[in-house]
Length: 119
Image (cartoon, rainbow, N blue to C red):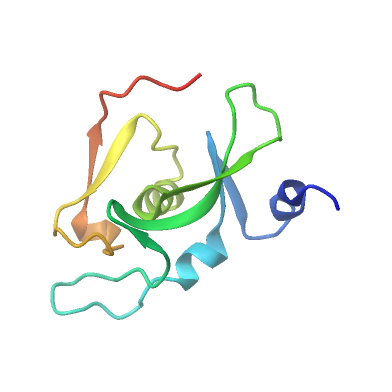
């Protein structure tokens, strides 16, 4: 069976920004279009205690096409897609306290991270 990665990278909705690659259509299909009472557009997919999660491709620093699948916070992928930039050196926080929130216009805050880059 062929490696799954190259297949997904050829799909029209696949987007790669820096270290991350993801399916834009799949990402946006799992977000409520109608806001709740707090103005949050809630994530309808997988969750963990640290927030909404989605599978993405994490690429190494050597610019190879061989990525590995990894779960990441949805808000990081949304920020990357909307701003067309890699959020790796930053934390994307929700200001409303709702870990399912995907309202990037009003509820996301970008902060520098103190983590050292992984080699």
